Amino acid sequence: MVYAEPSHDGSTILTLSRQHARLWDAYTGRCLHAIPGGQFQLQSATFSPDSSMVVVTTARGSVAAIWCAHTGRCLQALVGHEDALSSAEFSSDGALVLTSSDDGTARLWEHAHGRCISILDKHADSLLSAVFLK
Image 1 (cartoon, rainbow, N blue to C red):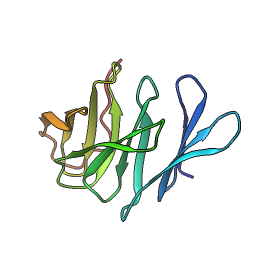
Image 2 (image 1 turned 30 degrees about the vertical axis):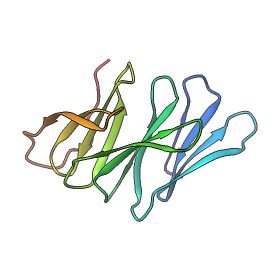
Image 3 (image 1 turned 30 degrees about the horizontal axis):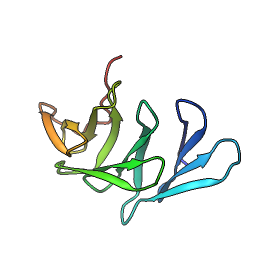
Image 4 (image 1 turned 180 degrees about the horizontal axis):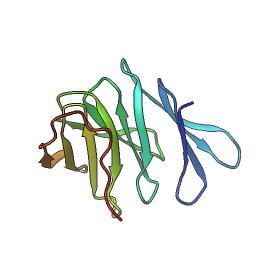
């Protein structure tokens, strides 16, 4: 396991390994859902502010995916980066996702429609992370 994060209400735990993200019932320890990495190693995963969704990125792929935390179903793919993703996070209201990539860009997404609304591209090197200031 590389990473673990509790949901905001503490009822669910999100864990991340190189091959899967998993959602666990915090009270019983039962695995609720496994989110596969597919052919690429997973890089990051985090809950939305209301814990209803999880955004997952891959270390070699260029797509971030939004997953339903309740059903384990993929809701949206955020396609547009040209290299591996390093991080992703939701805005405080959950309406936007910010991703960073080895392509030297950060992108702001309206995740409900998978639409990139802004590209921050003045970096000369890979981005390790991009975050919303709170």
